Image (cartoon, rainbow, N blue to C red; front, top):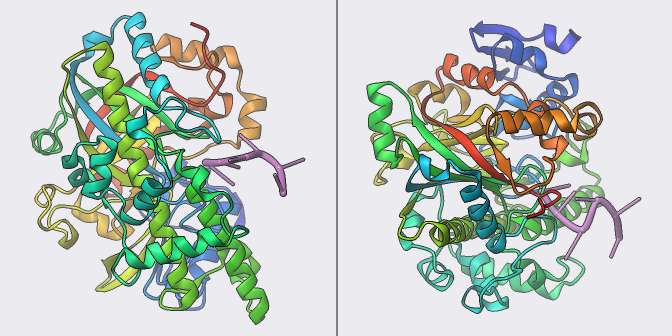
Length: 498
DNA sequence: ATGTCC
């Protein structure tokens, strides 16, 4: 145990605080004892740096926390005045989505049937860096004009119609579209036109539009699941509102804004860094990755435009993937129905009422968790339940659908975004044995599109998901509504021969 | 996360 761990003051079974000095309120730490012990010293240092950074009013560290870009992945950083691009992250609006079908789980009993669906999906939705639109039919080809519309309008009626996405799915989004800081999409259009002219600022931007409807690589994935509803009466009622169907197949996706958002984020890091340097400003804790802007400054407004456009791209990317996945399922199982349960981000800054004031809530690898009655749910179909929280665990131990409890206020209305890394990619590749990973998944009758499962993405490269979920429950943040059991996984990796 | 080192 190092010095920083000794500074953790335990305030509940799964809650602690970490003091940061200078009369600042301490960091809220969520996690059972074993989870708190799993935090590395560098992770805690990044959390302290974030809390001490200018304009920051509050920081929450979640059970899935690990080292990130400036701030830990798995943290919430709140500011009434400042925006922080690093703590939004390089994959702007990286998100989870869940598609519920009415296909009974038994239909996927035979591996041969699952192989057919895998093939139908990978034919439509590519994986891997730089990949996109390999076999998109003309009707769904994203040219410069449609790409521009996607970036500036998000999931508008016109965009959904052009891409053949059901218009009702916009209502199952945390945010279906993002406007510029002036409250219009005109500011986004102006900004995008300017970026398009500055070739050194955003190179070959139109080539990135064609990645719409693709997964990418790393920890992104698509996964067919069997839905198992939790036992409680209240949980059953909530599951019904969410549209979850016990014993039926659902499809969970994890991806973000691909090369488009990446380029916008990297361009912002570079330009804000040079603003700091030219003005002789010090980086918070000396870390350029914690570069920031006042939300109402010219730089802040430009960042918010770029974040909004990355977010719009990520939103339509997810919705298109879900439409293509449903189409793939229907190729194998004609006539089945599918509805989007929810689409929710874990890399975004949003304005929300926190501690009595509207503030910028930066969720970096953290999921919004608004309980029943929260003002931002007024008028939505989740007003009286809270919205669905989609938490990927790992294919072996499952994933979870949760709903926020009133206690979520303690964590700035946020929970974790998954299990969180236990070991670095390098360590995982060195330490984990390929044959054991593949056998472990085979033992659970889980197949994938990969010949061998990526070692750095193996279940054991991540923290114990059940301990993470226990942390969330014991801290009083959220309750489990359903568990998702993986039947097959789509990931970027060596393709299986078939 | 990212045409994973222009």
